[in-house]
Every structure is written in structure tokens, then in C-alpha cells.
Length: 445
Image (cartoon, rainbow, N blue to C red; front, side):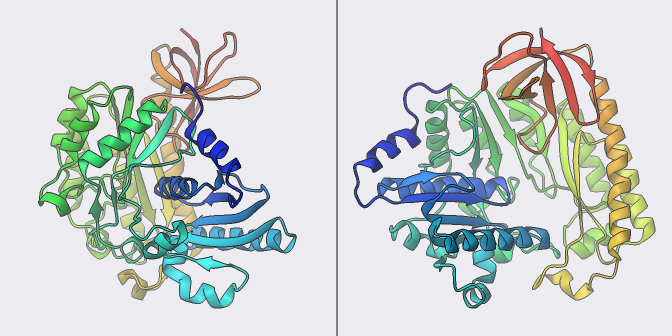
């Protein structure tokens, strides 16, 4: 655990001396990349002397909603949260509402007219106005106010995406890829480690192409080498590596440094050649099979996480069965499936959304039922082994931890008996005694 007052505490005490200080409540929706954006914005606002909190219902002078607009369900959640804050404003629990993030970027023109109760919508280019610093941009600083538990944090290494996947609105929202230079990322990682962070997750819209905009070459392996030198980081894991043109040299770095978790998040989306072509993903089915097999061969025991899309407009029953067969072959340790969401202004929009919702749901459920069995079998193989576990939380009847094969919030947990007292944020050797589909059970070894 970190020693001395946290950065949040220091800024808070300074703000109490500032008669113009405002209480700002930041609410973050969506992905871990949004979490980092909120933390960067928070640090800039605290430098101005304001009191910053990351809570959902506290009274405040200002509430900042960092929104998501990736798919329809995410937009609905963001809009519902805006309405909830408008109601709080009417009850005088909030004085001003500011909306930032992907929803503001994508829909500002419509929202300004439809939601006059909101005091300001800020696109990414306009965030400098929000923080009152004309030189501000999200990738231009290593200063953050970390909102996650003290022992782990996300490290966003780039912004935007150069791929043009037919179903995806991210390039429309976030623009082309811009990589954060290695020295700035190392500086940021050192600051996190100095604050007590023991685990960092590298995130981006696409890790694979990191650095190409800077040097014309894949630079992820070089970044990994540099981060491995940061003292205090015990676990480093990789999220969102695009499969095409995969930089196999990163696997050698993963093997060379024990800090790198044997874990890789690599979104596959589909396996049918025809659908991959329509999706504009590049590559062929055989490439994906070979990629998965080679990763497993190079890094024995690695846990692979992936995401899939079911119900793409042209997906036939036979192509769905292809995807099921691939899941049986790859035996991903972690897997999620999205039902296709038709998004305005994307190339796939003109294909319509012909597959009925109940058919999509049936296909998603079939894949997830298969994955549930695979996950159970993988977990049962761990019974009787001793694994290194980091403790995330304490509940009434157990401690909740994770292995190196699990990322926070999205993966499995290890539930540990409370026969002996454990400390949140510390590592322990845990003997696995039982297994369920998505959880392990254990005791202190």
C-alpha cells in the first residue's frame, strides 16, 4: 500500500484553502480508456484547486459525465445517466452538468438542442476549455488522479485507431491512432509505482499498431522492454491487441520478464472468411487459427481473452457454426460475445440489421454456454495447485483476489476463506481447493 497521503488527499487539503474551489464529481461510463481520460481531466482540475471526487450520487457544484457511445446500449446508458443528473440538478443537488467523452464527440449537435438543462458539452478538442489550459490534450501529460484501487491502474498508450472495421464507430469518434511516446509512458508508470501501484494494464483501441505513427515501425516490444525496468511494478498485462500483423516479438519480451502476466487480450470478432472480408478486418480464417496456436506454443500456459460479434448482418447459420467450431478449437480462457449493433455512419450500416434479435440472442447464448463449459474445465485443472494471487477486496465471508490470468472487473475471481487476515493490494500464495465456471476458491497456502 502507498505510504503517506494520497495525491487526492494532498489536492483536497490545498483546495480547502482556495475560496474559489468547487466540488467536482466525475462519473465515468464505458471502458477502461474512459477511466484514464477521467483521471487525467481530474488531475488538471485539481491543479486549479478544485475538490475532485469519483462518486455517483454526492452533492456537488459540478458533475462531469464521461460518456460512452460505442454501441446502442452504451449510448442508452449514457443518456439515462444524463437524465438522472438533470433530475438531481432540479433538486438542487448539482449546480452544473458537463458532458464529455464519446457521446459528446459523436452527438453534440443533437444533444445541445435536446438537453438544454446540460450546461456544457465538450468534444475531445474542447477539453482544454473545460480544464482552462489551451495546451491540454489527453496524451500530453503523465499527471493523473488515479480512481482505481491503489494497487492497480490502467496505462493508456495510444488514442484512436487506423483500422476501418465496417461495424465500428471508434475511428469516427476517436480519430486516427496517436501513440504516446515511450519516455512519457515510462514517466507515468514510475509515478504510478511511486504511489503504490503494483499492477498496470496496457490499454488502447489497438496495442498492436503502437508506435507506427511515431517511427513507422511496431514499437510495442520496445515499450514493454522500457516498462519492465520500472521498479515496483510486479504485474503488467496487455489488452486489445489487433490480430492482423501481430508483432510476435512481444511474446519474447513476455517470456523474458516475469513482470509480464501470461495474459493477452486479442479481439478476434469472427472466423468466417466472408464475414471477415465484409467486416474489413483483413486476414483469413487460417491466419487466425495459426495465430492462436503460435501464441500458445510460444508462451506456454498463456491465458487468451477475446471478444466476438454474433449476428453480423450477413452471418448465416453455417457461418455461426464456423464460429462455434473455432471457439471449441481455441479454448479461450476468457471470452465475451456482443450481439451485432447497427451503428450510424459505419460502412456496415447499409447492410441493415436483418437478423432478428431472438436469433442473435440464441447464437450468443450458444457460444457462451460452450464457453462456460470450457471455462469450468480450465478452472478445474487448477484445483490442487498453488497460485500467486493479488487481493482486490474484502467481503463479509471471503477475500476476493485475482491470478495473473485475470484482469479486474472483466475476468474470473479467486474467493479466499477468511481463516487468516489478508491485506488488500498484497500478493499471496493461494492453494486452489474448488472451481466453478467463472470463479476459483482457495485458502492461504
